[in-house]
Image 1 (spheres, rainbow, N blue to C red):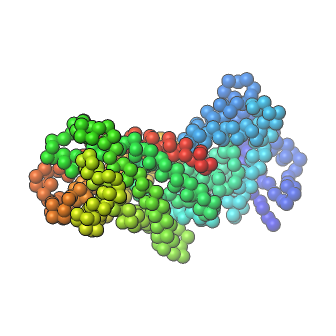
Image 2 (image 1 turned 60 degrees about the vertical axis):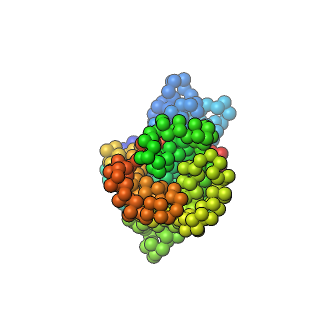
Image 3 (image 1 turned 30 degrees about the horizontal axis):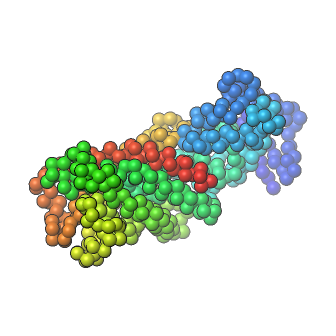
Length: 492
């Protein structure tokens, strides 16, 4: 079997044959040149990593290099990777690496990288093309468009060829400890599941291996736990937002006066009224949305090997609508609890029973229509702006630098804010309808929207948006920290 690959060593291309017993069909001179070039490269990398110039590499020095090489990996991953490299390479168990240990480790590590490179390089021309990247991701169970495969390739590509040489591949993964293709792909296309109090437009895509081993559900659990904690921290602002949406115009209420009024009426504990429902709905909503998203993707894709951005948006929006329909009664109960007075309801179940007794079962779906309509502008703007900002960043950096955690968080925060601005009037109408004691109280969606516009103008349709924006930054920050910690606890 011909397994010819071509790879570059210090601007010098060497043809190498890989046989079953690693029999290399090269001349002694070529092998000496390769060994010399490799040793020089290892020495150069060793000197760069040896920050204090004591002739040894410590885990802390490796961590600094890992942070600089890819902003996409978390601080926990940085520590795990650094300690993992030291543990694998440290032959005398002194917890530091001298050059001999480092060179031996790198030589073995590069053999694994070379095999992974050869596995992707299906036509054995010594370069990995976007089509080969796409084929590899499809084999792992990830549906990506050709453009997404091109974008992934550009993250590593340094010479602008939109294909990957061995040296580009090797340099990108040289400090990543695993040589298993599934792990390398995860590192390559690192993404975040950050909860800012609103649902993700499109659930993340997971590989077949991640689904089969349960890693996908562990990610969802980590995201759910992060969402629960971040929502609990920002719950007072969320309740103020609801109070402003429902009572703001009548009570001439502001953020501070609203907080004071709630504390005066029910004590500090009342600031978290309705938060229990907000947390309870995270698990079923995330699970149903993920399951529906996967099923709808399969239906849209059919016999095709890829799914377009538009189809992914349609799948995400449809999955969101299905999940929202199933858990919507909890949304109504959350709003009723938030605007209730102390002692009005004994808890979530009591609130639900009283709503049904007073207004009938359909009252648990009051405001459903504006909620459903609001998914489209929010999801469309959120996804479009997020992807656009991410691509602008990648292009400005020549396609070589991964966006990283802070950039992805900034893109997600800004895109979500824009989505909220577009859909907020519908969200306000939904909340007003949810809070109604009877169906006839303020009319339906159109009647209520017209009434708000007539009495309060544009400002009335955006009442309560200030606390909504104020909670975004702390929600994102808390959610990210807890999400990364949860991944460590869950072993992912």
